[in-house]
Amino acid sequence: MKVGIIGAGKVGISLGYVLRSNGLHVVGIADILPRALDTAREFLGADTLYTRDNVEIVDACDVVVIAVQDRLIGEAARSVADRAGDVRGKLFFHTSGADPSSVLSPLEARGASVGSLHPLQTFPDIESAIDVLPDTSIFIEGDDRAREVLRFLGENLGAKVYGVAGEDKVYYHLAAVFVCNLVSALMQTGTGIMKRINIDFEPFIPIIRATMKNIEAKGPIGALTGPIVRGDDKTVAAHLDAMSGMPLHKEIYLALSKMAFRMALERGALDSGQEDALRKILGISPAD
Image 1 (cartoon, rainbow, N blue to C red):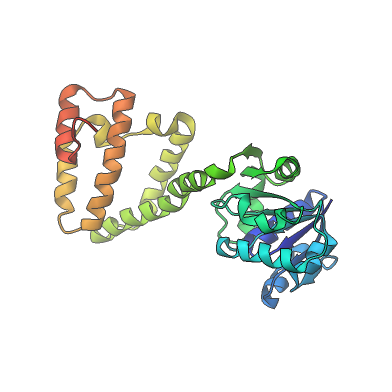
Image 2 (spheres, rainbow, N blue to C red):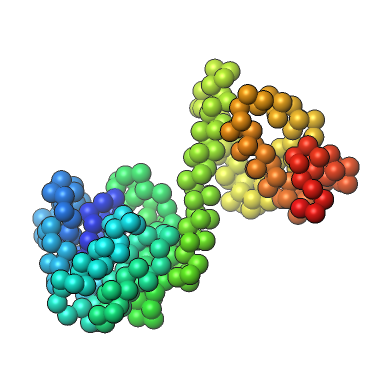
């Protein structure tokens, strides 16, 4: 198997590095930016093909990773389909979490197998990506041949490989955004309140770590603590009153508290009086 990569960004370089480290033949990598190729050279070595021409990678490989930004995947697929020679029997896959393999349809129309492989991980830089990939869940989808090859590649990249249907990719990615990206936004929301009383973020790190550990051990519902699950409507009222001049924070608090309320109900943590009091203060009708 000869693997080539289109896109010398964090994902493309880190995937190439880990696959090479596990003994796979990574032939080359393409990018239009010379500085991106210079960075790739630092990780993939001197014996790798570095080129600005995607077709050169396609001609030299039978498995091609399209690791470009999501908005550029379709354009890259069309360009290769228009310019490359015979692609029958080759496998092309992209690394987007949100897009299905159907965005590679111009290549499929020319006889190639297509799929997608997404590491369910956050990659702030190449070094950290390389470090965390072995413990990362890998999600794959595509045609029959693509899934077979992608499962093999996934097993050489991460901890465990999972399948996902193409039509479900948007929901898969939406879930990932909630549990990853928006957690950072939530932390920033808390930081904004801390600044009002001159407290830094650092003292809160231990409770964040403990919360994540409890979620891992018990799941979100079992790990839920705080005033909602205790049925403490007086504390919730005090919180809302304190945010009278903070409309965005109040909106976020109410939305998450409504979710926490549903979780508390599912856990059977509230008696009827507590449930009624919280419904009133959070603006939740009995039908919801």
